[in-house]
Amino acid sequence: MPIFEYKCRQCGHVTSFLEKAGAKGSHKCQKCGSGKTVKAFSTFAAQASSTREAPDTCANAGSCASGSCPLSRG
Image 1: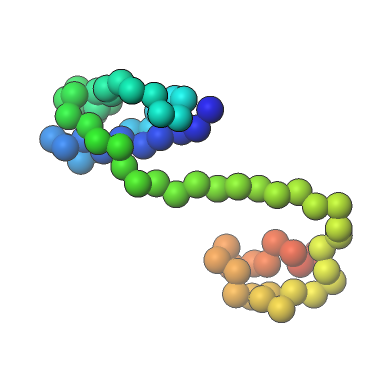
Image 2 (image 1 turned 90 degrees about the vertical axis):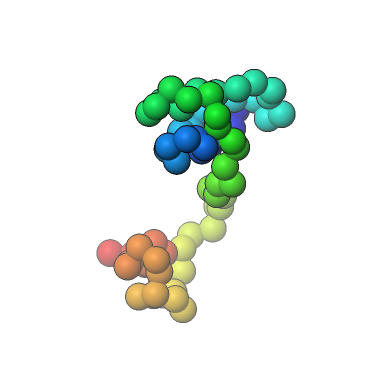
C-alpha cells in the first residue's frame, strides 16, 4: 500500500498517510487539526535487486550524493 503526503492549506504542515491508491477520503492535519488538506506531489524510491556483484571500481566514485560510492568495496 503506498504512502501519500498531504499538505495543510492552513498551516503548511505535511503529513504522510498509508492508503490505497485512488482512495477517496479526507484527512485532518496532525498539527493544527484543519480538514483543509491537499495531496502533495512527493517523490518515491524503488530498490532493485541484482544477482551481479558490484564492480571493483566505479566511474562515479567520489561523486555519489551520499559522499561515498555504494558500489565501492572496503
